[in-house]
Image (tube, rainbow, N blue to C red; front, side, top):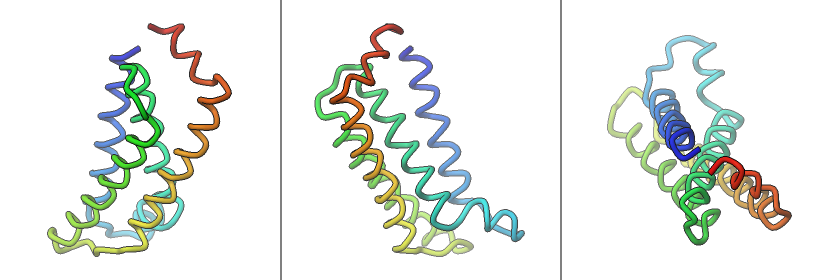
Length: 124
């Protein structure tokens, strides 16, 4: 299970960084890779995969750590876009990254308190 979780963790990072740092030439690319929904989904997913990884290693405060980590990655990505020149730095994108990670923080914590993540023990 840990190997699968690590693979998913790395895959989410690759998708976020390729999507976040690639040139957006067509309307389709701009629609798929920018805007409110893609940022929300990407960072909700990043926080989810991060928390599952932390839970599999039995770390304390996995939801808080995964939230803070996702926010850090969102800030890092936006500043990287500022440096590459062909993408724009956008505070609203960082806000949507934070909202996505924050929503997962709330949902994940509630699910955890209701025993949803107990299913992970079956895969150890």
